Length: 305
Image (cartoon, rainbow, N blue to C red; front, side):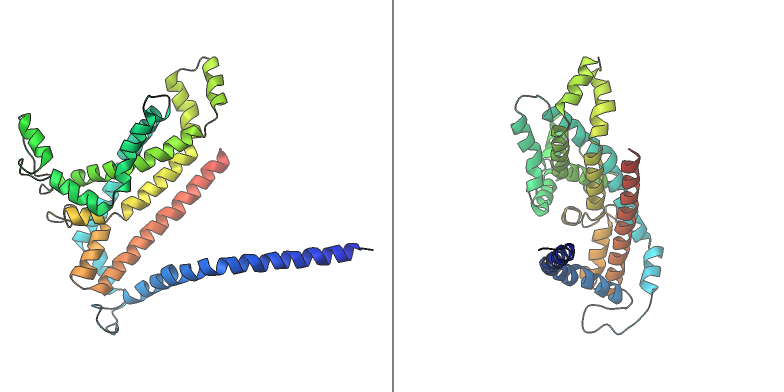
């Protein structure tokens, strides 16, 4: 006869066995996380305390001097401002445009598959190909650069898109938008498809117009997707590197310098790897502060909702 105590022991053994299996399955992921993320972060933090050029062991300990230099460097502050400018433009220009396209393409327009492919295709291209292609398009010589050739044909004033300090950051943002708008548009389309049609049909029966439908039904139900898209957009903007470096190398006169190109310049061009490691730690801190703050705010919003 099976007693209650016997059942409890079997349940306890089964629970212990399941915990061991879960632990064994987590070991490979934990090892990869430790080797490729945790250890490199602590190594970076260690080297940031040295005046180190990457050759031989780090011996010239200087403490937090690298961090003091970062705070007092006007070029770093310029790079920080440019990075935040890209973040702001992404949130208030790129994402609303992606949402507008998603609403236009995702609901009943003919040739939806074609338009989705056209807008998503740039995201498939590598950043190197994107940067090289747009460098050619931005060429100030109208015989080589398509954009200035169009300006010349219409009698407009031609521009040095990547050589003008007032235009270069905006020109780079156009490239970033062209490349990534399709990704965010696809996120929004997926979110729109998950909105129950019954809710919208009931609203239409109650006499809700299209503007009210968008304001009071579509956008609130799309809130989770919008928050995810904004989070990915900010993190991506903080880490943008390849397109900026290939197109301008942070120029002219640091007008397009961002945090990642600033870090790369000191680490692998000037071989001040201790200073570059300190910049990387600052970038990590900025990303962590944003992530923690954003997660806490969004969780509080979801609980209230």
